Amino acid sequence: MSRLEARSYAQGVIRVEDLVKRYRKAETNAVDGISFEVKAGEFFVLLGPNGAGKTTTISILTTTLSPTSGGATIDGSDIIREASAVRRKVGIIFQRPSLDQNLTAEENVRFHAVLYGIFPYAPTYALMARGYRAKVEELARLLGIAR
Image 1: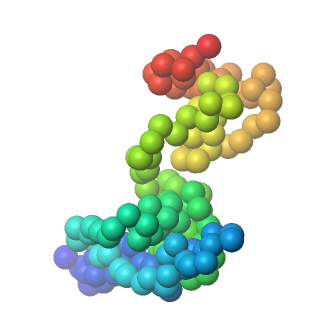
Image 2: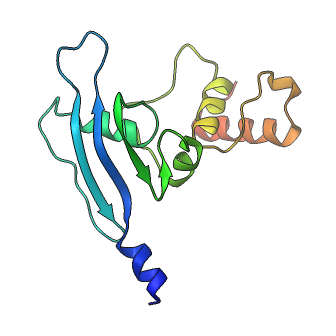
């Protein structure tokens, strides 16, 4: 292993520093100034009782929720300034079904495609490139939500 590889391996793949999340009208912080680092090759478990802030922390790290203060990086990408890069590097499995019943099937697929950086947002489906529309339709069929 080269020196550069050894140094990269030793650096934190996930780095969290003084992370805080306070919801509006809440009396206490959902996440209260946590800091930790996970190095490449390490196994990491986030344990705690209900209400300890585990889901909130993961939501912040996957960019689906913004922190009140503090920060984090995922594989060198800042969760605030480089959210798109972070989304390309992580996978999210939601605790509950994440389809929005107020959106059409195509809008749900588009939302998740944008979330994961697969396709840029385009406001009018009919004006999107043919390849994009075909991929949206394919994903909708795969998910069982096609029109």
